[in-house]
Amino acid sequence: MQKKSKISASRKLMLKLQSLMVAKAKEDLEQELVEKEKQKEKYLEEKAPPLNINSMSLEELQKLCEELHSKIDVVDEERYDIEAKVMHNTREIKDLNIKVVDLRGKFKRPNLRRVRVSADAILRSLLGSKHKVSLDLRANLKSVKKEDTEKEKTAEVSDWRKNVEAMSGMEGRKKM
Image (tube, rainbow, N blue to C red):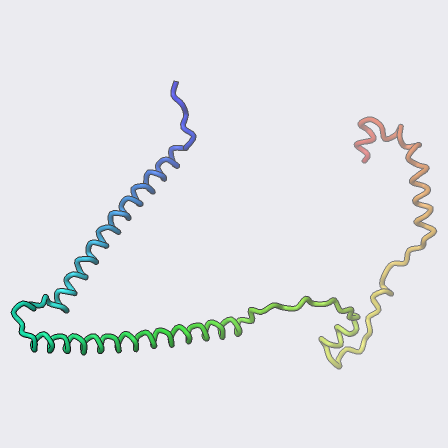
C-alpha cells in the first residue's frame, strides 16, 4: 500500500521551484561577491601601485612619506566634506518629513461631543436668512392613546387559551 502524502502535488511543485530559486539566488550572490572582490583588487592596483622601498635612500623615503601624508590629508578633507553634506541632507530630509506629517494633519483628534441642535437651527445655518418657516416635527407624529394599548394587551392575554386548539396542527401553522 502506498501512503498518500500530506502535501498536494501543486504544493510540492511550488516548494521545488522555490528551492531552485533560492539555490540560484545563492549562486548569483556568491558570484557577485567574487566579482566585487576582483573589482576592489583592480582598483587598488590602479590607485596604489606597489612600492619598491628596498632601492630607495633615506631622503627619498622621507619625500615618499610626505607625499603619502599630503594625499591622506586630501582624502580626509574630502571624506569630512562628504560626511557633512550627508548629515545636512539627513537633517533636511527629517525636517521635510515632519512638514509633510504636519501638512497631512496626522495628529490626535479630540473626541467630539454630541450637540443637540433643533431642525430650525440646522435649516437656519444651511439656508441663512432665507429660512422663515419653522418645522414642528412633533406635530406630524401620530398620536397614540394609552387606553387603546392596554386593551390590546389584555385581549392578547385572554385570547391565547381560546386559540390553542385552532392553532394546533398543520392548519394553524399555515394560518400563521
